[in-house]
Length: 219
Image 1 (tube, rainbow, N blue to C red):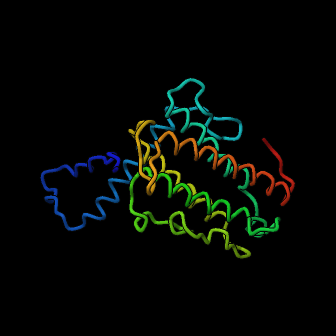
Image 2 (image 1 turned 90 degrees about the vertical axis):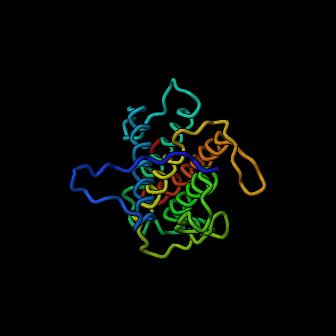
Image 3 (image 1 turned 45 degrees about the vertical axis):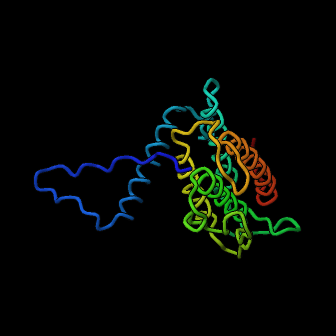
């Protein structure tokens, strides 16, 4: 199912403006999609409008189902950044456990999880067109293959880019809308609830890792 979220391209205006040509339809599609995503994100942020003492958007206490679920997810997305921002690249790539889990690896993993659920499942974008950074859809991932000095800031920027696209995919969707995930059928509601659970679980892991790395603590 393809979401109907495209915005009209801006009118160039003026009598001397050249007539529109189909020379670069791909570039135009990318621009229109980006503008629609930005408009959807801005509208969502303005609707919430409040934040906690750490700059995280507070989930709305009185709202409909979609705004409530998205509010909690946005709060947790901001928590991911808050927990780890300022760690050195060396710390963020350090293995503190017996597994390959690292701070940078977790952030990379979350970015592609966003892409899978909101681009491939909600947006029905073919896997090869999603633009995964660290994995091949829901298959094997190299998010965990972190070398000393790999940039945490780059991983956080990639995560932020993925979440902005996710918000755009939800614009105008209904919680009960049914989606295809391979042979399964899920709803938009299910995807949002799952992403709240997934992001919260990894935020807790990052909380522990960050304290082990430099002693920082917090809610």
